[in-house]
Length: 82
Image (cartoon, rainbow, N blue to C red; front, side):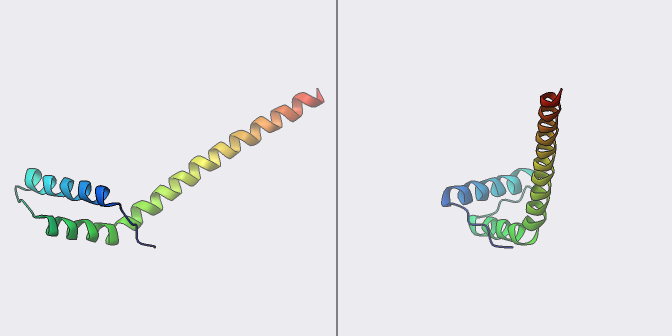
């Protein structure tokens, strides 16, 4: 999978959230470098699974919409022949 490029602002926000999590939930404050390493690890090792699931969900939603459109078209065809 191609690496995801985040903007500096997005990256800074994620790093801050990781720092907040470690401080609040684990009572273990971490610095910016360690938080960036955690973020990069999860992006590299786990991100692909979430990305793949997101694509599957998007495909299912698209397929449902396409089915609805096909049904609508069929209804219009039937109405035109009545």
